[in-house]
Image 1 (cartoon, one colour):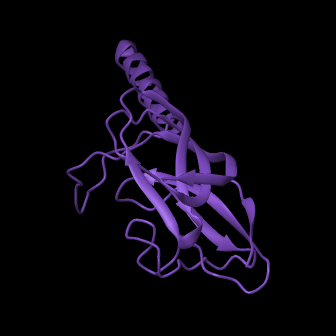
Image 2 (image 1 turned 180 degrees about the vertical axis):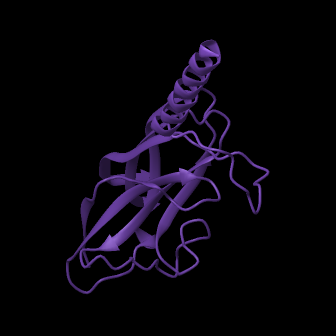
Length: 174
């Protein structure tokens, strides 16, 4: 009989140890799931920002600015990443595009933008300089000098943007 009692204590200690370890490491019994997503979650990391802006650029005889964008994507090999530029007045209101802006430079709400999709070929992919030409004709006309800023944004294509660069201030002249 004493062997049997020793076995129960040892079993009890083992069970308690397993319960404590499961609790410490966040492991729990499986819970019921209402729905299961067919696509695995896309995880990774991104950094996006503006390196510099060239204000005196000409492309095919058109005056504008070149915004140099930096993008880094980690653990996103083969996952399409959308990178974009968005323009705002210094009041944080989105800047409307001029009527001369072509498709691809205008958001659904009529604001000035540029967006493109890149697909990383490696687990650690870096674009040190994505030169983006924005014609001055695409900016709204102003009667007085106006302050504004542009920011770079990035995210998984089809999802909302999740990474934001810093503000890069610009001045619009009449």
